[in-house]
Length: 411
Image 1 (cartoon, one colour):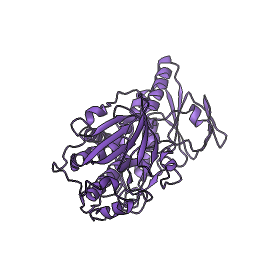
Image 2: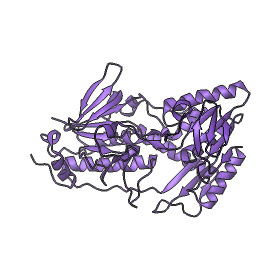
Image 3: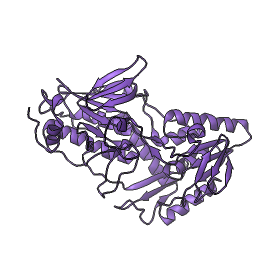
Image 4: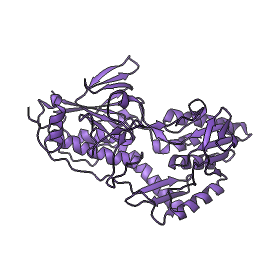
């Protein structure tokens, strides 16, 4: 019986893991299934561009995985039962269950309401393609009306900065306000902060610092200091969270729902479950939690692959580098900031800004899309056999842990 690997989610992390496993493991011993709610790959790194009115490529996942041996199941994951090793999927045909021997949880994240009244009912976000398209329609309607409009972006993390600058550049007829809870660009070096302020000034973005939003209403935003802002569109980028499925399944999760994993990306509570990308609470090589980012998706995905392949083939598990080295921020299409960080995740002195930084960010985005669209490119062609194919699907958590330590699973 083949070892069944099920990957939940086909974002940057999930698609990378599925494609790489397909090349590394022999199809005679392992079958890989990817479950994803949408039929195409979502370039989450560029959803702020999509919302601003630009056209963003979205390759069909059926084309992405063509020729890899990966099975694609289109549907929404509604439940995970780690005791029965089963996943519940809802689809157009009524859905059903998928059994697994190894589960890779890569369902990503969504915007976090953070308990602020009115956000869920009235705010837009750019954490998913459908929500970015809704914002796109709203901005287009405001722009087409020709009377201008007020757009309030809440949150000055990387997503908030990129969203505010992209909208301001793409739709100059709209008035954009960016609300920062602390100092604008606080995590950047002094020079980069200055560059960011100049970019906001150039794009006529109003910046409110040290401001906390108290409530979001249909046509305005109320702040804790009494400030009230007119808002024809409020864009919420003040934090991200993961869905409740992992917690409901009984996996060990953080207070924000991220699955707690060890150095090998294995769930600390359920050894046959791996978490990668935004869904994983993983510590980097510096001992600090890895941030939710595309870079983290790549690093955690690579580590999960090394662990799964090493464990199933009876070899040693190599460690991938788990480090976060830089922030790449786009400020519209012709400007950007490249900020290197040190081993503690703090900004180093100096930065790269302007067109050069914008080109670097564009190259990173292009490479991410290309790598996702060619999931098995450059991988070793020699696939590995599952060391104990006859017992892999029934290995106990204890024996699975031994396999990760470099020992073969013995029946």
